[in-house]
Image 1 (spheres, rainbow, N blue to C red):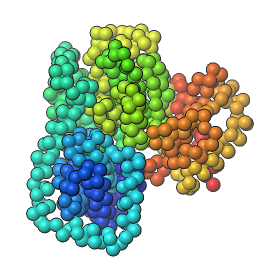
Image 2 (image 1 turned 90 degrees about the vertical axis):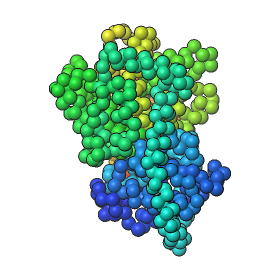
Image 3 (image 1 turned 60 degrees about the horizontal axis):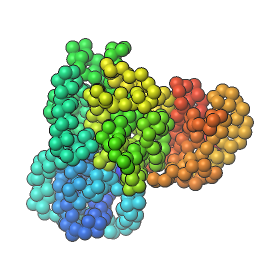
Image 4 (image 1 turned 180 degrees about the vertical axis):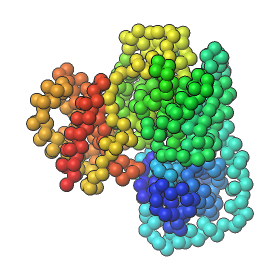
Length: 583
């Protein structure tokens, strides 16, 4: 079982098949759920100072969710928790709801295949536990699992609950769900507008309504049976007078990860809608199963077809929109210091966008909790971090949210489109030295982004199976192979690609260390080698890290410019060196 801060995950389908849609789990896995609930209860009771903490409990749309939730309900009832069980709930929804409670348990495996499931834990700060706090739970969890008699006794106690005690939890399920949706809607208004001031929110949405009245808009969603079908999406868009269409409302019809290969379905639906005369449909999205991530399809009016945006492009657009919006809101404030927090493999195009807008970029190790906590650290230092996230997967986190959210992504793009006179896109064009066309479309905004060639996170060549379990040892061997090869290839790299030098950078948690001499110091964190030109400016990087949620080693390459051959060559070189080191 993988026990990362981003989620404890394994295949919970009783058959062990990761593609199994059966709702059955084994007795062993039922015991795991009970112990996990016991561990979290003890943790949240201590941290909140409550003998009977109020805990939100929700599941995504996976078949094994109800069985795992039921085991946890038994355990939590026996421990004395007050449980707000809302059944199928999106991750941003339960985290918004928990802000007024003591904490939450969310049963989900995010984008993993349907037979997987997992558990996310959090307090009331709007996000999952950070790495250090998660480590405390992991230590307690593993210690308890070693005691077979203790596990058996914990399960016996959990299932000694009376029928009426369990029924009482399920009886308020609908009201818990209603309250979760209401809390989430209020919170999403705050994240989209950047303020909890109701008068400001009314003015902002009034501006959006005026724009849509003049230029109707439509959005299409491939729910793919995810938790977002039972969220606020449909009603929220309709309230904003945005036409909403959807497919695969109830069924997980294809792979869950919202990458290019699975966005073809929403793209096809967008094209079908246009053929039927729904020319207002300009944006589409597909969330993952827990609904905290949704990558984007847009209608390109120049070629008259639906175009799938790459994850790094989605994040870049969100950064462009929210950075300019932050400047639009706060630019005249004396102590305003805009910044962006991203993960290590986010494309360097973010530095270009931020640089043009006078903002700084800070990088953390892969993992949503790492990026969220880095942003908190920078806010404590006086920075305004309106936008953060993991460009490598397109996940946009808009402050004050501490979790990715497709609605925030969609409305970031809508801000760019609707704010026209002295608006966000005009600000970007002015500051980046580009010509501004007042009749711009989203295609024009996309064309204005810095051009980079970047390995997609879900591409087969971005995932390696390695034998070495000690990642520090593997990276030490990689360094030896890399430095030996550099001496042989330096001249050729300079001639072919203009690469004159390199710098090693590592990320561990929220800390980034530059000019590293010992690659092994990254341990299980991220390792990046940045390649520079004759002026010592970064023009490419290769990156690697063992996944914290899957048993694989992830790699990627980012190259400035439209240079697919250079990206392909550098990634192939990295792959060759890792294989050489993995002996």
